[in-house]
Image (tube, rainbow, N blue to C red; front, side, top):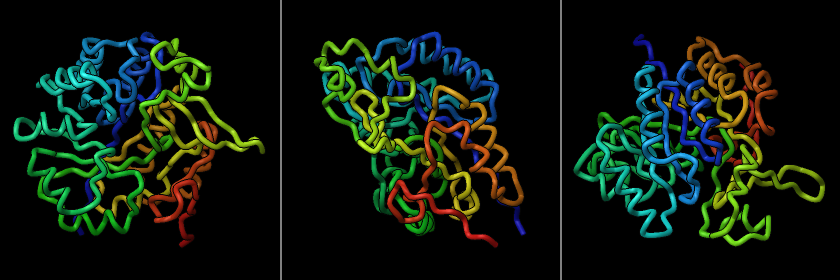
Length: 305
């Protein structure tokens, strides 16, 4: 029997707003971990200005020298001509592969150079996947809400040479808005927000009246409070033909999260205790419902053999 290829680990783009020195220190640490691919750049809010494009390129070169593949990510929601100009600047840089966060970036890249089709492009069917490959996509990131049976069916007709990446760890990005939720919380206008989101390195948790975790607000983005975690589902991810597992950055214990997934992808047999062992390093309770075709916040335990 042919041995299956080991899945790669990717570190997704940073969703939160951190101080410049913190960002540099974080990626220096990530260079020493087992991740194979690192996505870089401001993917959420163009008002965040701690790092310039030249800083992201310096980090990308450092990671490349450490043996990682560095990828530059464009923003998901473009709200101004300045945002469009910034996107154009990223896609013109031919030193690194680019992840297209929206269709504007896809059109700028199409037919000119290879690119990664990001998860917010919402590729849900074989025709769209083939179209993206025809435009030059060499990798695509599965939409968060897609279930494993639909992915397996889609991959049976996957274009040759196209890698599949799945979001496997992190708080789930739920929505992007022209309104800044963090500024609204502090009764500040969006254009004079004071960059208050930098005070919340893993987003700002909202709770119900019963003190249950509900949502996380992160500037113009809302996220799930619970943490999407597919470490127990690695056998089904491998069986479906997934090439890459995406892990989303968090401010603490990211090295331990990566180490857990690295051990899981290398293991001959799944470790039933892996998820429980990760709990102290997670900001909230785990979930994996979308992968199983259930509500996203559900946690489906693997069947006991």
